[in-house]
Amino acid sequence: MKKWDAEKAREQLENIEDSAVFLELAEAANQEGSSLEDRYIAGVSVEKGDFSGLEVSGSVFENCVFSDSAFPKSYFKDCLFMSCDFSNCNFSSSTFSRCSFEQVKGIGADFSESVFKQVELRACLFRYAVFTLCLLQDMVLETCDLSEAWLDSCKGQKWRWKDVSLVRANLYKTPLKGVDLRECQIEGIILSTEAREISGAVVDWMQAAELARFLGVVIK
Picture (spheres, rainbow, N blue to C red):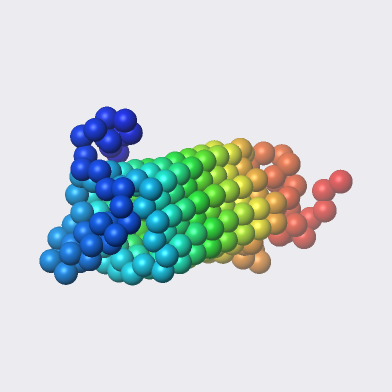
């Protein structure tokens, strides 16, 4: 995964700080079947934008706000997202490869049927977000809030989750074998009746007591 130095990136990449300019470039890229490459996109604000099929690589998004915007079937490679807001955006059937999210807000965002490969999320807020049927491959979640998010029917491996709130999150049919949940909050998570999803996961004693309810066991 590419390691970003934000200050150097701002100096080396082409800077875009005007929302209208970004919209023109994104539209041109889609019409030409090309991608946005090597851009530092800062302070852009767009409401209800349509970026379907957008391709972006080697770029940084900083302090951008995309409200109720559509990015279905988009492709992001080697991108850094810092302090952006993607709340209620549609990223369904998109691909994120070797990307990092830092202090990003995506409340209610839809990432269903998307692919995440070598992706890091740190200090992010994704409450109520939808990750249904996602492929999560080599993914780091650290100090993130995914309370009441939909993480059902996901597949993948090499998940490293630390200090993640999964309170009342839906993990139905998402196998968690080998995932260390000891530093995560899992109160009220939604599993199948047999709780097969949690088989092989690593939990502490307090979490085991929480999960015992799926087995009809009362621990006193």
